Image (cartoon, rainbow, N blue to C red):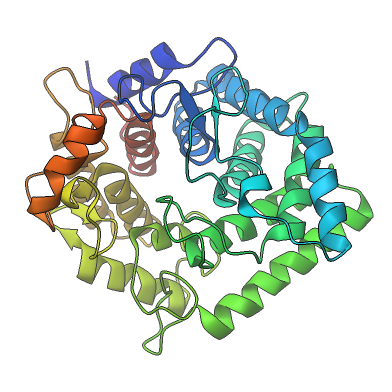
Length: 361
């Protein structure tokens, strides 16, 4: 079985009856939970390889989960408009149980990027198959209203860290999501206008405070460090698209600082499991190279991803052969067990990059 077919099989095997994709079916901290962000990229991967029903089941699940919280969003927005402070703990969560309810254990929950990423992925899927996903309209409108109201608040980043900062990758996710929500055609004129105003606000904010002096996007506003998640701001989110000087500089700087022999670190100060190279980030870097026409470079990242599969074909979250801080690995092993494997997001990113390069078997 090829890694493309195995990835499709793994994702289909573990998708819940309700449509949710578990982040990892065996890893102690992720088991039983689905993230909007992870799942959106997983759905994009399977959608590209013909699993229309699986992707649509996930999108319908997301829409139900978000629609169920429409009243909560209305309340949060109303309070914000009255000038009341809304705490991060009151915001919508970043992950849900597979049956769509909030988890009952502590997590770094206030993350806005997943809502934008889901809207982006839904739009991509709908365009690919030439039809809207039934029953998603209320979810789209609720997610767009939530992002339009709160896009400029600090929140946790992709890696569930630094809730006090405004992260450029998060802003890029929201920017793409709100553009997608408008394009889906289900927002009211007032909602579309508000979403478009937020998109313009993100562009202005990132241009003013999110670009380093040397021209690349920064990890968060006012911080010149780079982060692997910034690759998504170029491809696929198009905050600074392929060919734009800022986009090109961002890909170049991430690769210079964080890529080693095909793998990509999250950021240089990473200590999670000692700071290994992440399979899914190799997928993002390869994706950017493929869209820029650098197919040989993209293929090297795809090949590295494939080389990280175990004998059964399962891909991990990260690999531990070249850790940034080896002395910090054991504390995580003792806390949560070995590195997550299979990580369905890794498999989803492999499918995306394989499709970009025409690898179908």
